[in-house]
Image 1 (tube, helix red, strand yellow):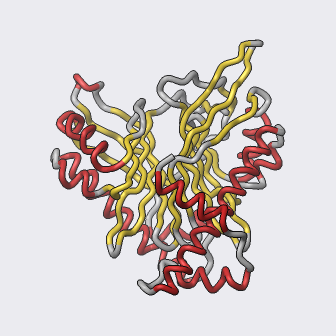
Image 2 (image 1 turned 90 degrees about the vertical axis):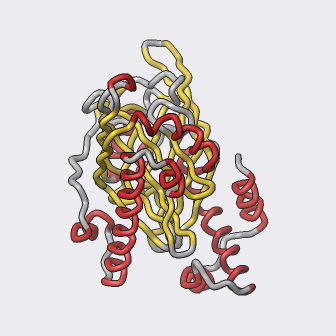
Length: 336
């Protein structure tokens, strides 16, 4: 676990959940002004979010280990997006329940660790590892990988808005189960409302601005890769950014990302992306979509796959906090 995460977890353990009336006032302060009082409120709200996200993931792990697909589905938002095994996306609480009803029959207990966390106003981001055993034809196999989980607050409750479970390159993939693959269409600012469940005009206006900012950062990132512009490619990431390329281990921080991209960019041609799912609150946004990369033949040729990105604001600018890219698996298949 990184040092920033340790500090957050320590802060969480030191504080209890805040009363609802206090929470309402704190939510209006985020991200807050540069005053001592606002700093305390920001710390309190950060602790509140982390404590609730920790509870959410504890409940998720408990429901998995007790083989309770209904209990797991209850932890997801109505319009949640689940990507199991880096496969076909599943959208909606009931499809998620049906997926786990089949998948959990093969799975043993799961362990989940925290490697990175980011907090917006009513949305958060978690990155970490998971590990479990699945059994097929009386053969037990260890499965381990990385998860990116996007919790979001709905009233007083926190639920999973989006989640990616991606086996590590050296891990065995779990046995596949049938997936109700969602047919997602590219998002535009005019189509944000139905997919994100927003109702108020202020919320719609904010989502459009956040969507525009996120799209601009992703466009600049694509262009820097196309032009082999390493400084601009690195500048797109936050200082503590995380990058996972297809079939590779995570790179943490700009220095590690720079080292990898300095070798990779000359092999990359045009990169095309589309946004299929999006949400945001405060200073954090999440986007999931598809990408197509025109790579040199000696680097595998053209690549088609998926990406999940998390962006955060640093002052008035948005930067990539986490970016995960993975290639397609068998169409229509997903796993635990």
